[in-house]
Image: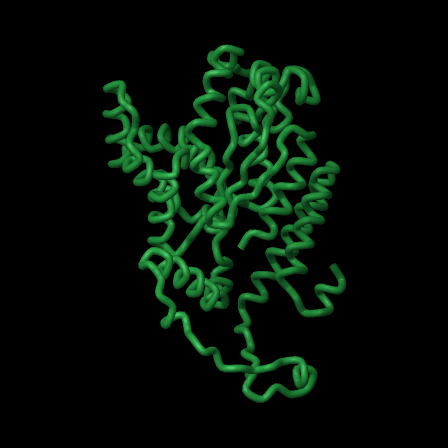
Length: 328
């Protein structure tokens, strides 16, 4: 950590500092973790007020002399034959990097956009909430977005309500419209975690097109790998706080004080009616059939990260934090 600071690698220094904060939080030192995160945010903000100094490479001098071999590229990006879709994505990434100083002036960085892929009971919701607390990301659950849009009476929400009241399935177009509205809100500036969408490769392509509109992309697609047989036990024992949605389990994670939510202090809890062995087996089979192409899609893009989700919650969280800290 000290070496990265001495070498002037601020991004690496901040990344390591956030990992230290995450470790402190896991040990229960929440105040220390928060102080570290606040210090990183303050330092990043201060750095954003100064423009980067360009180093001319035409005639390297001093420490750079003898270390750099300058050669003119034989081909430029403009010379490469790319599809319009891929060229657009590359240009969007380059634009965000070229405008990093401008983004920092407003307290922002090139966006992180990640998603969780995993069967019911893999721990997507639990881990997403941990990443929210550690990195300031926003978890976006498809179900929650639909309900919020319907309650708010937005155009897309009214369309979704009409479909659901008719007993139909909400179309990908409506979900994308709702997601577009949500991503435009200022609290998503640091990045988001998508939970429950996309579920198919067709939805993934639609999501890519949506993110392309604002020069964004998925930086990490995290597949939580589990054993189907163990899922029955895991799912049948889970329940949540009725007030804040914090997840618990009869065997693996109970409130510190029985009957009281650790996060919000609520005393009401609930279980899903479909959390039983027969329904779980059916849902797992449907998951594998539906999402196998999705995993292949993100693997082909080079952003798929696999995490063993059968271990201890803290160990899984540490693995996820490392992935997110490196995602750009």
